[in-house]
Length: 156
Image (cartoon, rainbow, N blue to C red; front, side):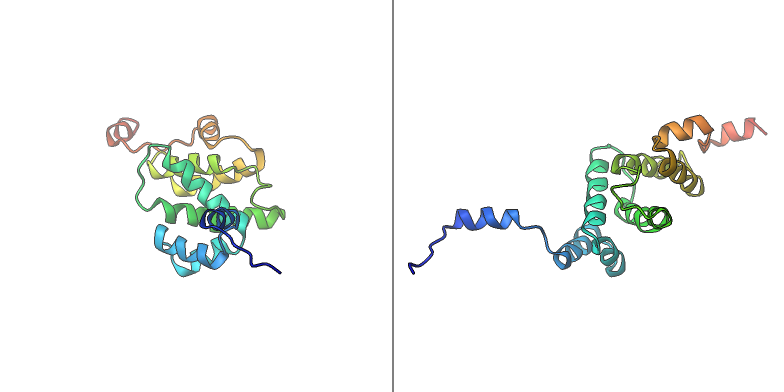
């Protein structure tokens, strides 16, 4: 049998087709996003969950809103409340009506102080059930948090 000779370009092309291994992805999440071993382990336990997490961060990076430690915030929402809702309904993350874009909307509302974290849980549940955008839910229900003390003082 003749020897197989593979050029470097072909090797790189083949490497690009192979998905990132779970352990390597976990290590990357820890170094790139400053996540704990525990959080990175949970996020990378399922390829879909890890992909969803990265999609949320990719969409967030184009949203032009700066929230400190957004990676941890996204991780907490996915691993906490969204996972609870998924488990209760026996759905996978991509079967859920909460798309990565909708989670970005919710996190922007909370991160900018327009919505409290506790109301954020309510909005997430309503989004999960209805599929409506968090912005629409907040507007329809009047959930907007007022942080301006002059407005708060005037209403008392």
